[in-house]
Image 1 (cartoon, rainbow, N blue to C red):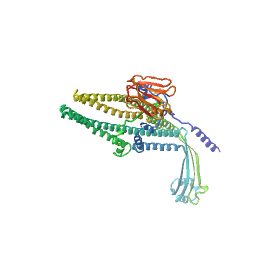
Image 2: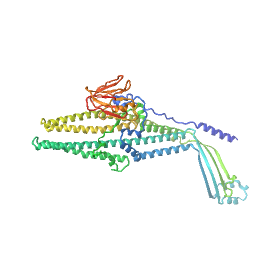
Image 3: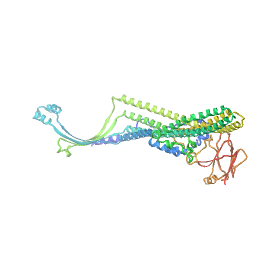
Image 4: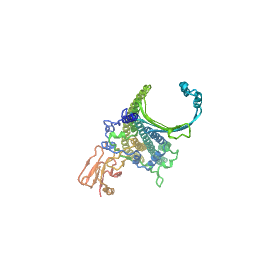
Length: 613
């Protein structure tokens, strides 16, 4: 009875202590945003959007649809399904889940069954003989007894053993905690690999379309230069100009043709990169990636600039947490912290409850009888004594590894802020540059028109027209390249933000509004949805002054949003009861947003009025 009470008391005490867990507890990190986040981008409202308002996180797999390109969406899906780097990352994640399952199995009792049949013989001069000799003369027939004990015999054994380690100090729980964190880190790294592959697919795709746009523009320039050469040659044949003019024109034509091989090489390189990312052989996607054409064989997609979504970043503190690499770094810090507890628990005794039951018999005829049974039950304790230095060193090692993981997390956060800042700054600068390049192209085109007219009338030599043509060609080339850089810059922003750019507040998802000719979003006039169909049929009528007036006879006070353009000064907005009126300078081509995702360009006159029907 006393033995049973002692066993019960020890078991109860062990279960009570099993709620303890040594080692430090992990506390989720709170990465802080820079003190002056908006100042990094010059306070650009077009980029920061609803920076101070919380916004939900968008999934990385769906954000690329905001570009509105079905072929890009298909390429993204193929890359996610067939990219070998992603398959490797997925296998690493699967391994981490298996390791977590193995760690969790330590909490369950261990049960082992065994059975054996052995033919064995004892030594005539072994322990049994020594015991017989110790008894001396009291043992009759000593020699006969020794011979009997040393005769071979069969030993039948069968049974099971069960053991359960009582997790007094939380060693097993800390091991499971570390395995969970490792699995979380592997999941985040898999997501990071998916994001990187998607970003590379998008970047290569936009570079491909950029090369195709440059090819289309270059071929058009070659055709125009060849036509100009014919005209100049005709004038030279007629004696109106010297042979120098057609010679200079041939030189320019040769320069234009020399660009074609380089552009074709860029196109082929981008195609090969896309096929590699999607797990396809070289040339497998050439037909799909070729620019689409209309019925007359004119390329369409190669001339279309990629639409770019608006940006609304949300709370600055949430921007970094969307990045998978930050989640992976935090999970690795969590795992390193949990492993300290595992090492500390190894300093203390391990208590195991064990039990066993089975049968043992020297003959098969009695094997399985109740009298052949054997059993044992009770706790066991294992206490480290002579390897304490090794265990202490392991604790110190785990603490240093945890500090290393903490520094790595801080570096990952700092690197993330730098990448976000660089991506947003580069994108904002390229948008502003693109607007200036558009104005440069218009001015260069006007200059070429004037130079050609003066040359045709004999007022200037051909060199003036040739210089004007070269300026226009360079302006067109720079604008096409800027368009591609804007798209690639937006991809960099997506990647820097962890693949998730929430929708602007009040809009259903990411809708395209940015026109590539503008450095910032155009004025927005929000109207009730039931007015949209009537607004589509609104009439445009020329006005007299150099401003754009928008009249909307809806509601007592229409909602009007505006942006500020540094080159135009502050736009003026004025609300009236009915109709609403909003005027801006007519220095650049604006767009009126009449419904989410739709834009109506205002062209053709210095001033236009939009009146609802």
